[in-house]
Image 1 (tube, rainbow, N blue to C red):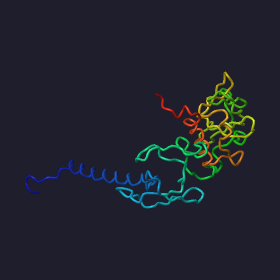
Image 2: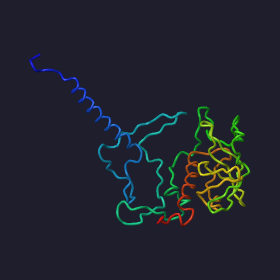
Image 3: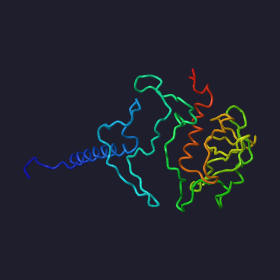
Image 4: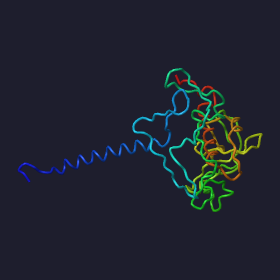
Amino acid sequence: MQPGAYLDLAQVTLYVFWIFFAGLLFYLRREDKREGYPLIPDTGTGRLRKTGIPASPDPKTYLLRGGATRTVPSVSNDRPNVALAPVAPWPGAAFAPTGDPFADGVGPGSYAQRQDVPEAGLDNLPIIAPLRAAKGMFLDPRDPNPVGMPVIGCDGQVGGTVTEVWVDRAEVIARYLEVEVAKSKKRVLLPVPFALINSPSGRVSVDAIRGDQFAGVPTIAKADQVTKLEEDKICAYYGAGTLYATPMRQEPIV
C-alpha cells in the first residue's frame, strides 16, 4: 500500500448506511401505497392514473387462512357514489353530506366495504358472540351487569333496554350491548366504548345519538353473529351521531 493510502472503515460504514437507509425509505414509500392508491381527485371522477414517485408497488397476493387469497393494491373496499359534495368549488374544500348522513355513512360515520363474514378465531368460531352463545364466559360479579338497564340517549330520552352482553372471546372483554329498542322491540348492538354504564343509577347513557335514533341502528342478519361489515356499519352509525345527532353539533363552537 502506498504511503498515505488507507481504508477509512468508519467512512465506508457511513456510506453503506446511507445507501441502505435510502433503499429502506424507497421500499417503505412504495409499500405504503398498497392502500388508498391511486388517489382520488377532489372532483371525484375516478382514480388518478399518476401516483407520484415512487410508483405504486406491483400487486402482491396473500394466502389467508382457509385457503382464500387477497391481492393488494385493491379498490375492492371502495364505496362508490357516496352522498358527499364539496362546500366550495376550490380544491381542498370540505365535504358535506347531501342526504341522510346516518344512512349514507359519511364523515365521522364513514366505513369501509369489508367482508360480510364474521371475524374468526383460531378455533374457526366467531370471535364476537353474545354471552348466551359464548360457552364458558360470564360477567365478573364485581362488575356492573347492564342487562335490564334502560339506555338513555343524549336528549335524555329512553332509547331501549339492554338485553344481553356481547363479548370478544379473543380479548376476553365486552364489545357490545344488545339493546331492545323502545316500542319497536327491534334488537340492535351498542358498542361498549359509546356507552357509560352507571351502576348506582341503574342506567346506560349514550352521548352519541338521541333516544329515538336507536331505531335506525343497522341490524345484524343472524341473531348470534355479527360480520365485519356489520360491525363497521354499526360503529359508523354511532360515530355519525357525534356530529349529526343534533343540528347544534354541526355549528361552530364560537
